[in-house]
Amino acid sequence: MCPHCRAMITESDKVCTECGEKVGPRSVDVRSPNDLLAGLMPANRFVTSLLLLVNGAIYLTIYVSDNQNFIRVAVKQAFFIFRGGEWWRLITAGYFHTQLMHLGMNAWALFNMGGIVEDLLGAKRMFTAYTVGTITGFLLSSIVNPNSPSLGASAGAFGLIGALIAYGTRSKSSHAQAIKKYFIESAIFGLVMGFLMRSMNIPIDNSAHIGGLAGGFVTAWLAGEPRLVNDWKENIWTVAAGLSLFVTVLSFARMMMRFVEISGK
Image 1 (cartoon, rainbow, N blue to C red):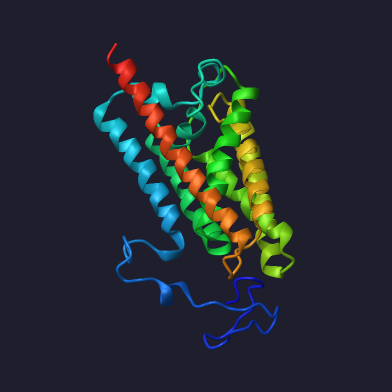
Image 2 (cartoon, rainbow, N blue to C red):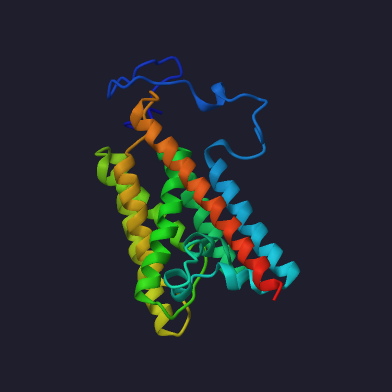
């Protein structure tokens, strides 16, 4: 299948017969058997699988240790973000869950949407959209609901929904239009359910969902689809993904420093 127009082509085709784009080798043909974790995770869900592992490992760590200080230094709280300078909470909040059902629902959404985004837009764009969606989601939540702490991967998951809507908006293929329609409906359904659940005093942070949706949409709109040639445009998104990873790791490092500090008091 052509990665640009989704037209059906054969393995021997070097140029798509529909859109005229050059077709590169399949990822399975160019992947080295010596690559780290090669064959242990689905190729089109590699980043998604890593995100699921991290979320699950963090939940298990909190459950086994029963140390609530992890939650205290990671959760989104506007006061500590804006006045305490604890900016890392905008990212770490997206990796923490306090209930197994909450983790399960977000993991299910991340597994389904993450693989689709990786397949259509590539791992670099997927992780960047997920990270930006997490940040913009909890940033909007901090502004709209400053007195309500929140956490969970749903802001990043809505960022992936936004990325898929952006993909369908930019691409005019029938396949892309079907994706856009489906995920617009999914976003509306998710937001409506969030408002209904809040009316029943169930703590759903819809402002984080809206912020994540917007962040993911803008990121994917700017990124466009992957190009087969590693030109300067592709290099931008390689750098963007690298920065996303760097900021995420730095956020957890700062969080752990704060954790050690308050645990020693």
